[in-house]
Amino acid sequence: MTSKTNETSQTNWEPKIIAFLCNWCSYAGADLAGVSRFQYPPNIRIVRVPCSGRVSENMILSALKSGADGILVSGCHPGDCHYISGNYFARRRFALLGNLLDFIGIEPGRVNFSWVSAAEGEQFAEVVRTVTEKVKELGPATRLVKKIEAMQAA
Amino acid sequence: MPTINEKISEEIRAQAKKLLAEGTVAAVIGYASGSLPMTVKPLVVRRPEDCGKLLWNTFCVLNLANFLPEVLKSVEPPRGPRDPKPEGPLPKVAIMATGCWSRNIVVQIQEHQVERERVVVMGVGSRGMVSRRKVEALFAGREILAVEELDHDLIVRGSGFEEKINRWSVVRDNCQTCTHPDPLLVDVRIGEPVSDRKNPNPFKQVDELEAKSAAERWGWFTSEFATCIRCYACRNACPLCYCPTCFVDDAKPQWVGKSLDATDTGLFHVMRAYHCAGRCTDCGACESVCPMGINMRLLTKKLNKDVLNLYGIEAGMQPDSPLPLTTYKINDPQKFIVTEAGAGKEGE
Image (cartoon, rainbow over the protein chains, first blue to last red):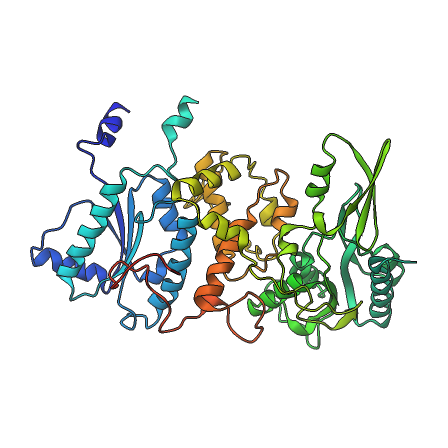
């Protein structure tokens, strides 16, 4: 418990960002950023999904619940989806989810959505930099995070 | 002189009796009087002689569309899961429906839960249903023993008091902001049609909250849902919630904890509302059945607002077009995407 408190103290706190990347574009974009040696913050934890259309609100919210400080969901650019239309359906769902989370008071910038193609290594690094910066400014996530320790103490 | 609702009740009984006696339908879904003042209970009538139990009043807050898929299944001849569908038309079911409930039936048809040919909609124009909670709040500390309904007033009686209150002042919030009170599907018309209401801003409550800061909204969210006891009445009363296994009952993976922890309750309500996105008709059943008086309808109302503003769709209003989340447009708004030029909040 003490180590956790230290970790979340302002000085050396580093955000944990869960990135859901689609297998065909954004994951390959991340791969390209890696082989091209583009520098980006090491705060993201990548979850590889078949398509951005596969990412449900359950996954995003459960990542928040488990203490993720930020979320990034990234798919192919509209029109480039490997499954033709997966990202179009995802776009409608993410727009509504983003607005709903904003409505209940989740800070804007916690949950992010982007399009990154397999050829955009530098853009991927840029997206990660932007998102990490935003989340760092917000500080550790407290809203919709399940605090087991607080429950045990009660 | 009988009141409007007494006349409607008479008409419902006569029509239900006729439909059952003729054999047009195998069952009629309606309301019977409840055991407490200001309550009704849902009733499925299968014999013409039982039609006298049916009634219509201003306290019909439950959404009957919720029972439709189950009742339709119950009137089918019994068969095993792999047996073929019997030949010939299956028995029909009649159901009362106002504006919002008929739109729920439309959504059920769009989602292939209900076959249009098997439903006989007894359309009733809604005059708004009274919130029991609002009436009880007016008489805090005094027990209400009986409520008599007139056309525009309610007479509330208890031991030692009798008061007349204006009916519209205690009508539910969702009915007060409703713009489509008349049923969309009508096979048998009951009473007079009601015209669409002009409402300058049906999303006023949502707008007021949106104008606040993120911290204030979070404060509202946590305090509103703090009293939730996870009884799932909101889910069970909802005609959209027909999944055999709900996400809250999933154990592997367990999306939402089953405890009364504030995060778990909050997540349950966010996910429940989100699953109704583009399907909710704002019937208010969830709010009406909540034993703790939580206004969870605001979450679905917010989603309704976004679906209307971003995609121009109101649930259940266009029976021939697909549901908003099962379709897309190439040029759907995407200002919320961080890689887009001028990225920002959607809908602004």
